[in-house]
Amino acid sequence: MRGRPPVRPVAVLVAAVLALSSCSGTGSRVEQRNGAAGTRPNIVFVLTDDLAPNLVPYMPQVKRMRGQGMTFADYFVTDSLCCPSRATILTGRYPHNTGVFTNQGRDGGYATFNARGNQRDTFATALQKTGYRTAMMGKYMNGYQPADPVQPGWSEWAVAGDGYRGYDYTLNENGRQVRYGSRPEDYMTDVLARKGTDFIRRSAAAGQPFMLEIATFAPHGPFTPAPRDKDAFPGLKAPRTPAFNEADLSDKPAWLKDHPKLKPRQIQRIDRVFRKRAQSVQAVDDLLARVQATLKATGTDRDTYVVFTSDNGFHLGEHRLMSGKQTAFDTDVRVPLVVTGPGVPAGRTHRGLTQNTDLCPTFQQLGGAPIPASVDGRSLVPVLKGGALSPPRGGVLIEHHGPDNAAADPDRQAPASGNPPSYEAIRTPNELYVEYAGGQREYYDITTDPHQLTNTVGSLPPARLKELQKRLHDLEKCKGGTCRR
Image (cartoon, rainbow, N blue to C red; front, side, top):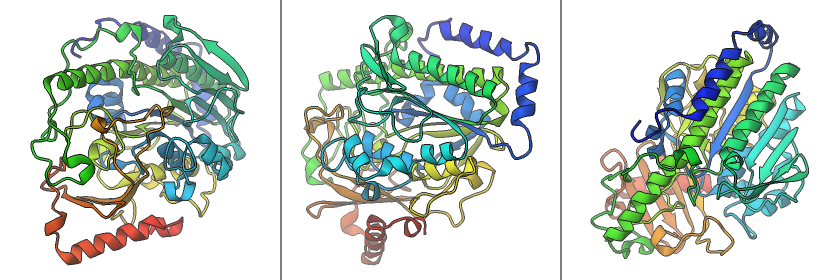
């Protein structure tokens, strides 16, 4: 791996943990306990913040997971913004059903999520009722503060409000506020790794199925790497895709079409940001390695699903935009999803539309919890067992309220980063169709234009346009079973 230190401290730690798996039969005792007929599997869910697919090549542990399990090549989020995406993940419902479209205010944030009663009906509450030990660690939802109460459904809780800088933050640890400083050992991602692996060891010793969510703040800005990674990847530049500093924006909607071409100094900044993002995910990769080593050491690896994904993607130079998200382009709404675990085919890539609405029902089905009729997503368990969704999805909904310019919002975007007005979009296996507030529209044929360079809505056959409009408008008001159909 270019530019990485030849010996990483975590590698020594992981080797030591792995060695424990051969000591005094610990693994065999756990295997007998967790391998009994009818025993429910464990779930470890690692949710990153703003991690786009173009960072996966710099994460060797994620690449190993892809070889061990399944990669979902067409996995999309309902909104390329932190809080609405996390609300969807927790509940399995679209933003128009959670009421969470932004990070704060009347249509977003932790306060709106709770005011709508969403906190009482999540995968955590469902799994806890069936006997799971549940733990939430890291970033919960925008607007949550360490002085706020522990949320329903979680047996253990270690959640920060503002941990974006990686240092000098406060965790609510089961109702007690604990302050962390600026020492290397206080680095947020490493603290979460220590707490997460400790929870796994204690849960394995208790012989109780567990569900652990570790939600990192990395690689969200300001893109702070761990000290050991601050000099990694010297000279690394952002990918120069065909959409990078796009040559012609005349076909784009009004919010985008007048963006000037990126200047050399802006491109230098983009490259610097990409390099820092690649550096900051090294600790996330280490966290995954430590989690898997601990699962092996405790003998729970054969009974545990490990799920890795992101709340949204990230554009960085594409379509002349500086660093940001919130658009309907694939750079922002298509994110990695990799799953390993019992029965998951090794090295398999699933090509078929899936979405973050699907995680909640998947976790609940794995844990033997009933899936409420209000869930908009579909369980991916048949796919994880080597099958397929039947019938396959014809399209997924993306919905966004904007622009969100509140000064207190860590995801506030300047116009140069892209700040689209409200829109609704449908992404089919090979098309993207967008309708903006005010009437402007976009259409891209992904088969011939995978980077969404040419908006051809004006030449779309009327019958196809009418069909896409109907499907989009049906999804905009769907609920539960009507979304799944």
